[in-house]
Length: 375
Image 1 (cartoon, rainbow, N blue to C red):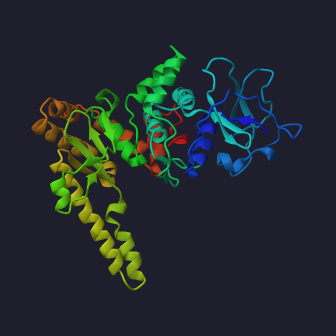
Image 2 (tube, rainbow, N blue to C red):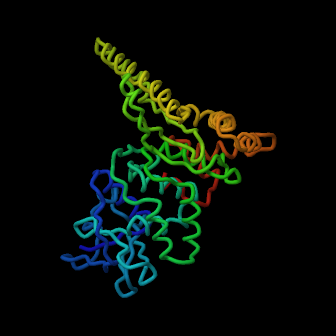
Image 3 (cartoon, rainbow, N blue to C red):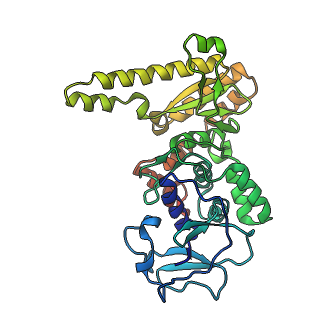
């Protein structure tokens, strides 16, 4: 069998593959023609459903997306929606995932999804593809996230690929979303904070500037000699400033582990572990400040509470104003002032978060775009 998946179905397959934590094959190929061999015709029985995270076979009502190199080679089956793509993309733009399953390379996939996803969802997809995590293929919003996976591309590689595609509508859309992305994101929540940090105010962000993620800062020898760690890594830094953010998940203060251990009779070890993690977080922020990076903590409560992230970003702007100068504080104050779009901005934040209500907020924010298929 040879089958090339397209667009959202290809994204499902890529997320399944990344969930195995294997590096994506570096070799690229041209678009192969669909071929059901050794079977004589296409049926759902020969489809590798688990590799596209499908629990049941596709149908005319819920088809998979595939692509063929010519009209003559087009896959004709009720369970598939087949597009034809001949010479409109650069050569060697596809990846062999093994056992006859192919997808567009990550750079082409990003381009293809530019008119499918909202700009914010597309930007978050860039963080994911250029980062070290992968969302769940079947339940991207609520499913289990795979961490510590190899990135499959970078912002620069996507930009270089878009250059090869020339002047197209999707290129414009992709470039715009990519302008808010950065390499080396470690988690979806970190990516959401980073996106909102640099998203322009007229697009419901805070406009603090471009960000860089998880850049290691080496400590001075005298700090190391006194017991400090040799280096520290802030999650997010605002370029051109001394300000950054660290997103603190529940794992940073895992009280649930203490309760679980206590139910077993002895919580001493769990208490020690939680205390050590908490103290290390305090030392990390202190050591980063000594190295010139003032790192503000961000919690899940800041994202879910109405106006919570507004307060964090105003505090960040106040620090930038004090330390770096400029107009960050006046700009953020203007965003949050009377007549602002605060409710719409909070709805945007809610629409991106991993909770059941997120899909409803996404539909309310922009019902004509299928946010929920990618987040």
